[in-house]
Length: 173
Image 1 (spheres, helix red, strand yellow):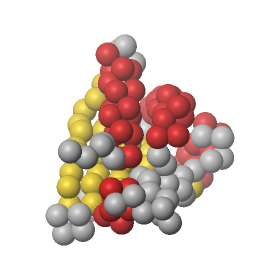
Image 2 (image 1 turned 30 degrees about the vertical axis):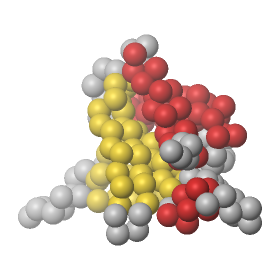
Image 3 (image 1 turned 30 degrees about the horizontal axis):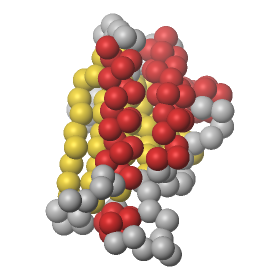
Image 4 (image 1 turned 180 degrees about the horizontal axis):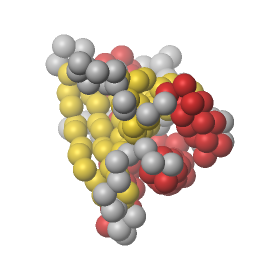
């Protein structure tokens, strides 16, 4: 039998930390997925949540590991530095992207202490008239692999995600 991988250890702690906030009544977990991609032999864990009272914005934390990292760890390759990637995604709506998106980015940079790279992707449902509301998918990427040594950072990461949701909802997202 194999020892749990970095991915499995990090996933368990991340899931527990999010569910602790759900149990405390601060957030509501709305979806989770634990996926294995058989074509690339990669794994992805995603957990989505909103503020406890219904709000239009939601957050999703994604943990991903590639086959190369899993193999390096299981085969104990001393030349490799196995780990996982973690992204936080925020979903909200905007009416005037040219005005709102720069404000969103500025505020998120302050909440997250200028650490992650922030990208915003807009979409809308096509119909006969021009869009009056856009879906904004905001991705926060940290640009490095994580492992068990980063577990102590999870409460702060989740708090920042909750603070981001609070701000997005208060602005009318």
